[in-house]
Length: 108
Picture 1 (cartoon, rainbow, N blue to C red):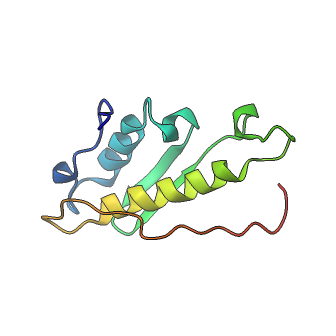
Picture 2 (picture 1 turned 90 degrees about the vertical axis):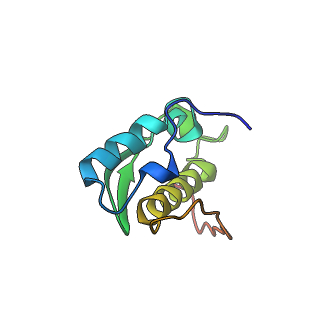
């Protein structure tokens, strides 16, 4: 398994962690991983809530000049993952995405 430097340790994240500290740790943990490469930035992170963004750049577009759906799905999946991480009950050792489905109805 590939180890990401400064990754978040599930045992260190608890409901009692200050929200500002958690969001800083989440942002720092992305360096060198897909969310960091895509430029995701998290603004708020607390139990049951996460808010983030990314500035659309050339790397987020398909060869056809449209915003690539994978960029949008990656943001949604990452938000769900970090949201789960911030909401784990004490003693939890992990979580997994059960299903991820996206329907696009138009080009951005």
